[in-house]
Length: 201
Image (cartoon, rainbow, N blue to C red; front, side, top):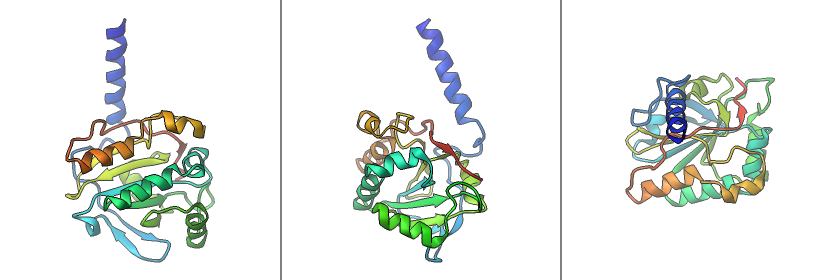
């Protein structure tokens, strides 16, 4: 029975990895993108060649996002990434009129009030960047290495809940991946299941 269950689990992971973001593969070049941040600056993936880049899909009204920001977990990881020389971009793909859609001024106020430390907040109301990456939840996390290769995609951690008390018990996937990269090690879990609210395209 244990063997059978393990086989089903492996099949499920394979189906997930080949699902709606079938064109997206860890170990392959990340999709190029062009997006404008809250200050009107244009960001392209090619701008960050030579840097490790984290993409964080976010929606401030989503309780799963609030879980990580309310207790400072997301901010702490943003600060740790910055200390490692990693660039962190938060991306809002909520369409106008949908939950989580913000103006540049509203996004900047959220950054200030939450003491967030992303290098920039990119507004993607058309959903073009989100769809290119197959972003399906908030949060949904991606790591791109210095060569432009996608090396991680999935959840920020391992416990899919809105309860902040679960954070210390969870495996922090993004933090672990960045630490392994900094140590010159392969990422142990390069694909994990994202959880959260659906991206409001």
